Image (cartoon, rainbow, N blue to C red; front, side, top):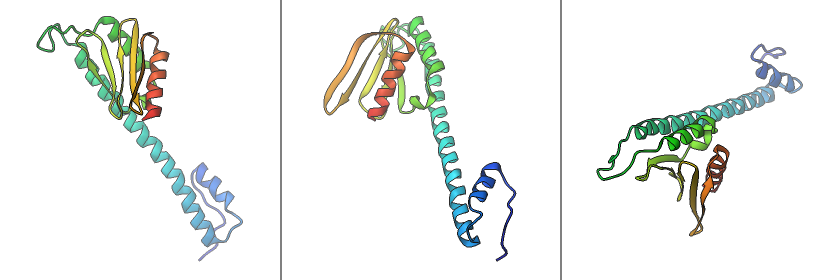
Length: 167
């Protein structure tokens, strides 16, 4: 096997190659492959994570766009559509939230014009109203939560983060 003393490639590849220069070729190539594969694995993991987050985001947006069009009686009875303020509030959340936090969430309109943000991975949810919101989650067979929390994007995102941590 010829001795390789130079390698031309990406900046990352050259950096790894320079770190390995003092080793014999067999060990060098084994370590080089492992290092390069770990870089590929990390990049792939980030891409897969971002793709899942994007899919979750677009699914929520698609449902939200449908629910925004509901009229009075959308449930076959006397349900009211989402209020303009709820539509505005959820739009703000979608615009400002880290998309990774949306994984494992779904939404449903409630018959009183509010929006339920529900976890698909555990028993937890947020009811988003005009000026405030409520949330619940069940941990160790105990219901915890709070009502009438003043609405802010940060407050809702904090609750979503908390729910995700318990998943």
